[in-house]
Length: 369
Image 1 (spheres, rainbow, N blue to C red):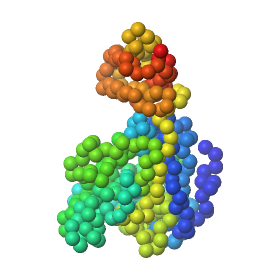
Image 2 (cartoon, helix red, strand yellow):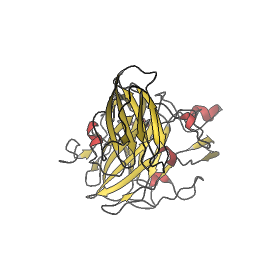
Image 3 (cartoon, rainbow, N blue to C red):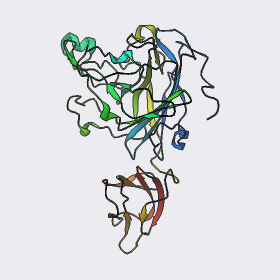
Image 4 (cartoon, helix red, strand yellow):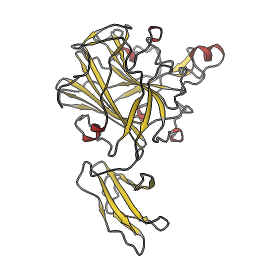
């Protein structure tokens, strides 16, 4: 992996940095979410530093205490964002137990927490409550205008991996009537690995629009990701070196002015701008043992037949311009089930077949004539 953190200063500072747009590349084959940072899929993303000390604002931290950096990718085929964070923290404080009831003795910001702040339509503004009147003015009229994902996981053993998490935020109409929703379902895949003393947080997450109901979430509120989409996207880490106390430091991915030292959780104005880029054309084989079983294209029926394997998965078909033509899903236990892909109403040309399952990923090219 080479020298780690070669471009990160030896102290973390509060000086302006990283206010430019974060360009998020499309991944041609999504990473396997297992906490292993060497997955080739991550090669198409640049490391971004997590080095702006928000609490105390303008403070400094020794790299022996904390170092952090992250990568972000996206996939139109999976309609997901992917995040890899590399954290070096000398003391890991865990043990959070989820409760929807505030003030129950387990204040989640007081643990070691990785945070993702997302404003999917870059609308900015306050996002704590679905407030009215003065509460709306002070804390927001729509709590889902932006989301603050506080991700907590217990520390894995050296060489081990943890996949159990709690993901929390605030929801409600006012401080007199609010609760803590659990957003675990927003991260369909998660792994935290400890390798050579460093923590690797790897996960995918779904992007929801501002009409999400935290008490009754619906997939109807999923956002369709596409090249050119602009959103607000920042990251932060709560660093606490002693269990049962308030966090010692709060380190963010973007510079903020002193008066906004701890505003991300309630106001999206300082989120970093992120832009999705890249075509949806998969190129070359990824991980796994070759393509799934399929017959050659039959020009008389203009169909391709393929046989699903036992694990759940799907096949996506793209034209040469990267446009998604069709996607077929198969459930777990569908071994030897035969599916047809028809090209009856499509023009002649080259088509790419991306097969994805838990066991394997592969890409095949078929000429339709």
